[in-house]
Image 1 (cartoon, rainbow, N blue to C red):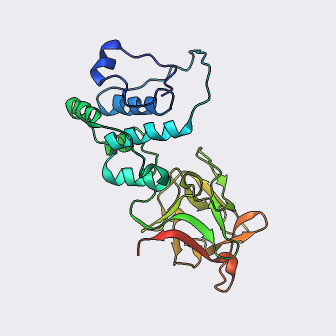
Image 2: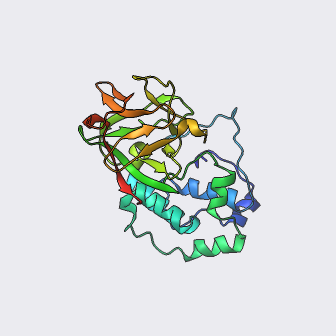
Image 3: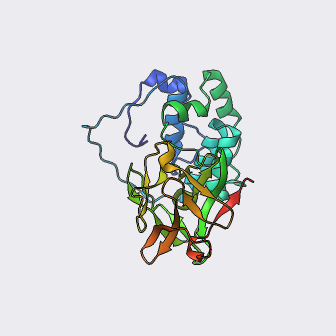
Length: 259
């Protein structure tokens, strides 16, 4: 929710335990933490689309955002989900965020759902992209050294897949290949819209069928199973081509492999 423009029942707000006083008020994510608490501890959020609220946004220190974010995830997320976040933001790993005992006590007092419940029931379309995986991280082309990139795309798609200089920011360049062959980001699956050479791979809503299955070996080709085509590169970006084992633009490597 947007913390500068919300209304809440006074008694319920105090029942939840108010804002986390250990967070920096000038940083963001304190509102995200409260919204998690609402959903996980018996409440709900409702958007009021016709309301109009004015707010002057001041420049903020982004390090305070990260401080607040870590306090939230340390209280609410299970260990494997925390690690998922730290893979995205490695500068959070050693960030000290103060005493959390009061917030953890509030959580236990309210008998809240685990965070996995939130992912399953409130935001089921969000993919935990490093679960049940064979390979994950940035996907780098062996010849050019460039990485697959989603350009921060957030909608259902289809949307073109890109390559850019590798910067290892997993929100934009994070991909995974599951053990059953799904190539995905946190929001999309990679698919081939047309089964013809020179077609372009796209990001789109995950269908979880054979249409979106891929195979890959370390430092090797990424092949779309149904079309028998391989992920390649040309001047404009990723493209599907007939597989050629000696073609360097068809060789790719993930940051990490689980085999």
